[in-house]
Length: 416
Ligand code: SAH
Ligand code: SF4
Image 1 (spheres, rainbow, N blue to C red):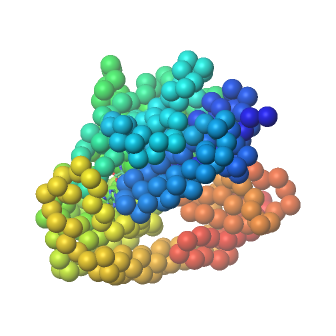
Image 2: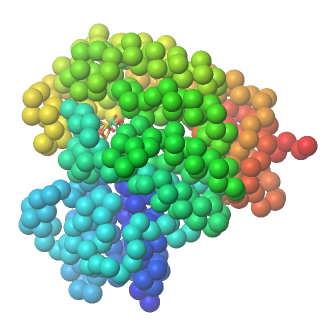
Image 3: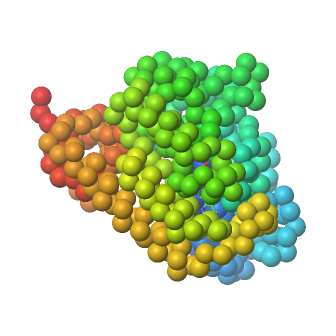
C-alpha cells in the first residue's frame, strides 16, 4: 500500500493547502501516515517568514536525506514559501529532493491527475478555506509577496460551492483565509468584496459560523464592519495586525497607516459591533526601533486591550526592502527582552479579559476530544474545555464558565 506523509509548518494558509494536498493524494489511492519512514511520498510544506522557521525546514530536509538515499522509490517534494522562482539554487542545495513546487501550486508530477482546488478529505467541524492567494502589499520586512506572488481571488460561486460541499460533509464553521482578506475581489470581473462574499456564505443552511483572517488596517472598510454586524453567522472576532505603536516605525515598515488611523478603526469596530475579540501581530526590534518607540507599542497594547497578541522578533529576510535598506541593529538579547516584555503584559491583559467570562454562559462549537475532555471555541474564538459523556463533536453546546486563564476557559454543560 502506498502512503503519503505531509510535514507542515507556518501559517493557516499552509495548513489549509496541506489538507487539500492530502485530499488529492487520497483520491489517487494513497493512505496518510504520521511516520515519514512508512511513506512512499513525502511533502514538506515550508515556511520562511522568519529565519527560525527556515532553519527548522532546512533541518527537516537534512534529516530526510538518508530516507531518500536508502529508499530510491521514495518521492520527496518541497512546497511552501521556501520555494522561490530560482528553483535551480534549491536543486543545487538539496539535490536529493525530487520536486519543488510553489505554495498553493499543483504537484507537478501529477499533472492533470485530479482537479484543483481540492477539498480537504475529511473536513473537521471547522475548516480553513483560502479565498485570496498572494499579496500585493510589500511590507518592508516581509518575504511573503516574493514567494506567494500577486493577489488572486477565487470567484464567489467557486467558494460558495466548496463551502456547501464542506457543510454536506460535516463542516459547521469556515475560516476564510487570505494574506489580506480586505483585498478580496478587486481582481474579479464584478469586483465583489469580502462583505459580498460573507453575505452569500451566510445564506448556506447548516453552516453555523464564519470567520476570516487576516485584515489589513489600511484597507479594512466600514462596509465590512457593517456586514459583521448584520450577518448572524459571522463571528465577533477580528485579526488586525498593527505591528508597531510608533508612526516612524510603521512608515519604515511600509504599512500604509498611522497609529491614529488604527485607533479610529478599532473604536469604529467596537462602537458598531460591540463585544468583539481583537487579535494583533507585533514585530519587535525592527531596525532602529528605540526604547521609546518600543514603549509606544507597549502603551498601545495596554490602551486597546487585545484578546490575543502574536509577537515576533524582527528577522531580516533576503530580498526584502528592510533587509536591503536597513542594518539589523537591535541585538538579539534586546529583541528577546522586548518580546518577553510584551508577552508578560499581554498575559496580564488576557487574564483580565478572560476573567470577565467567569460565571457567564457561552456557545461553544465542539471540535475535538483530547485527554478525556471536549474542546471547542466560543464565537469570539476562545478555547473552552468541558466534560460530557455525550458525543458532542460538531455540536453547538452551551457552557457555563467556571474557570479562566489567559489562554483558555473551562466550564460545564448548561442544562436547559
Ligand atoms: N498577512 C498577514 C500576515 C503575514 S506574516 C499580515 O499582514 O499581518 C505573519 C506575521 O509574521 C506578520 O504579521 C508579522 O508580524 C510577522 N513577520 C513577517 N515578516 C517578519 C519578519 N521578517 N520578521 C519578524 N516577523 C515577521
Ligand atoms: Fe506580508 Fe504585509 Fe502582505 Fe502581510 S500584508 S503578507 S505582512 S507584505
